[in-house]
Amino acid sequence: MYYQYFGLNEAPFSIAVNPRYLFMSARHRDALAHLLYGVGSGGGFILLTGEVGTGKTTINRCLLEQLPEDTDIAIILNPALNALELLATACDELGISYDPYNHSLKTLTDKLHAFLLANYARGRNTVLMIDEAQHLDFDVLEQIRLLTNLETNTRKLLQIILIGQPELVELLNKPELRQLNQRITARYNLEPLNQQETAAYIKHRLEVAGLAPGLELFPAKVVRGIYKYTRGIPRLINVLCDRILLGTYGRNKKRADMAMLNLAAREVLGSEPTLARRRTRKIVIVIAAIALLAEGVWLGLWWLQLESSSANTQQAVAILPAAPEVPNEAYLQTDSDQETISPAASRPTPWLLPPALAFANLWSVFSVMPVVADICSQASSPEVACIEDKAETWEELRGLDRPIVLDMVTPERFAASTLLLGIEGSAAYVYTDTGIDRIALAELGPSWSGAYYFLWHPPRGFGGLLTVGDSGPAVAEVAQLFARLDEQDLALTDDEFNSALKSRVSLFQRRNQLKDDGVIGARTLLKLNEQLGVSVTNARARERLAQQTDEAVLR
Image (cartoon, rainbow, N blue to C red; front, side, top):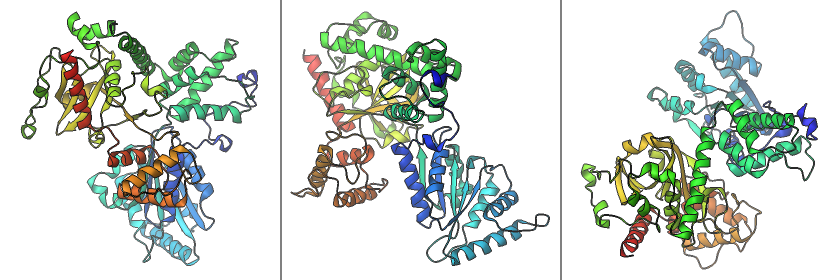
């Protein structure tokens, strides 16, 4: 097999769940912590959701290994059962005897209740875990809810873990299931890996399979491509990497290359639209960086496709931001009560910008340094970092009071971006080639892929997570930020993450509806920056871009 050709002991990217290849990213650890918290809290329902292949089965296995010894668990892997069959399966899993030829919902429920009471008297906990729960029928879910009615003054006698795909959340949000939804005490949606975690995941599996130190089968460029094709879904990473190694072996090469990546992606995934779009974006951003430094280079064919006149093209790619053709006040004078939206400018979609222009304007409100190419794929600045995420609805973006770059596609299928500067009612403030405009969300929606990017100011040396025992300048800066928030002269620590800082972080997280684990991640820091006025808000971004536009007019 090909793995011997690369000096490996076994195939590293099998899709079978092998405990030796366990890789726990930060989000996997968060998911496991939520489940363990739910099991120990004495609540009723615990919910874990995630897309296919994100690692829910891995979390399940870790949970089973870490459950206390005084826990009895029933696991239902096939939810395509009616209420009677599900209760019978639960009884089978828990070793509860019943007459297989003469039983009903009542007899099975009575048997299960008697078992739960006896288990509680013995000081034992009982857990029912249901996988693929998005396939459960309404009547089955209602029967499961009724099982949690048996309780003491302090806890439920049966804890139920529902595991499924994101459709499960939609199912539970239906009015008919509101009673069950209100009983969920812990819930977590498992997101795919980010780019750095994807690289660590691939490296981890190769090392477990026996890759010799110093050897590199997947260059960094190929790893970035793998992430862009798979969007960080572990199962897709396994399938794609396995096919890449097989093809590399077939061509007698020692390292994967981009040609093999693209070929494998076509064979395994069927197409490569995502990477093609990303590659287009990267090329455009590099071109734009050169244009900004030279103050005279045009963006080229991409921008010509969008612009009807060379005069507009030259104006759009000159010194950022582009000089407006109307006074600044014109685009801010709207009647919010009547949802008045400004008409489109010189072309039908003036808010569809080249990615370079959108990112460069976003950069300009965060830093006075020259814009760098590929802002969101490298450590572009020690003071500014990029976060990439996905959303399904505008409501998910409404609460982010910060400028955001939306990932868009033009009607001609070119990669594009929109610089979003706030949502108000059914409209959004966006940056256009003539200034800031107010556009209907319904007009933006068809072009949006769901991906978005924003910049923020992380502490110096921040690597992704800070927890008790960590030390360094990032810890010291966070402690100083909390001292500012509390208006204290002295910080809780110098540069070591101690228990006092953890308690303060947990309190801050609880007050801001964040997971109160005392671990400092990007979301906690974003909220902290927001409350201290460190974040660049939409209002500040609009003001800054308007000021830059004024300066461009004067020039």
